[in-house]
Image 1 (cartoon, helix red, strand yellow):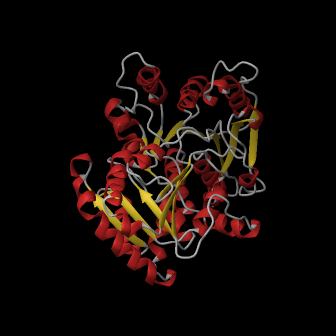
Image 2 (image 1 turned 90 degrees about the horizontal axis):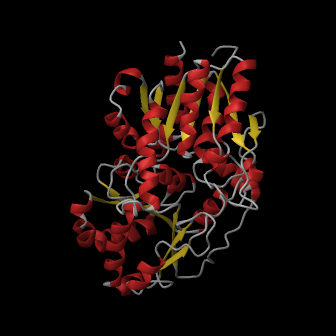
Length: 428
């Protein structure tokens, strides 16, 4: 490892104490990049401009010597003209990064998105300074989601704006990465010159053992549900994927037709709502009500709760309920969390998801596989029998039988190594 580390600026408008899911991607990269000869400099918007609730326990997970530069942004009070933090902080981040490049040797600029508008900063700064940049797709930028099919609606215009801006942002990129290849595969199809002009890498969210160590030190307690004798509790933690509702409805239909089998089962969806701060932004409640399962089997706490609180509730539960989408892009981040929490997994996943083989080979749980929308009847035909298999598996579960070495490739340090390897190729 070189004595003088190369410097990488990571542009991340949200960062702890923000409690948004995407901040973990950046914090884990920042934690482990120094091991591979890269000094990260985080350029973020000051938390006083954030709209979501803050989680200062997340700050306790950051390296003590991490260099963080906080900028101003357009406020949302007293008048909220713009919500997106990438737009509100755009100019201030731009000026801050330019100042860093003037005063220090910066070897690379890395921009995890969302906020998608932040990706444009790479192109602008490259044009002015020549500094190489890369974009990390935590979520796709240009894609269809519910509402985009209605012409001239807000969602339609948002999609169209992405179609216009993404080619500008990626044109001079040296590196394109994503949580899975599917997150940026279409970017390459839309911008074929990138296939020859930039490196690409798929890197799932990494799991971090130190998070569990910190969790134990904090001694947090669960508060969304209380363990009761004879009741089995399962936790689904995180946002609902737009294309996961159809598999979920199939599950609910099966349960409604076999209610006696599930009389002692509680499945808790935590932070699965439409908006991080909306306590009433239910995503699954009304579907559960439709099948007569609301607050008998299914519970939903729509508002996002702190990351370590999610892990606390997973620790309090009997198992982890994982639901993929009709697209095969799901990666094993939630599976890794379940393993670290020593909880058995029941997963419903697209058969092309990399998580399927990992769950089976590691013996961490049971996975019900299906092949997209046209194959949802597999869930209908097999959910009950697979669930019964899982309950039997649960009764015999022993963490010592889990082959946790299979998850090593999905640790935060290994994922960061992939990133560092790409950076080294671009800066040899």
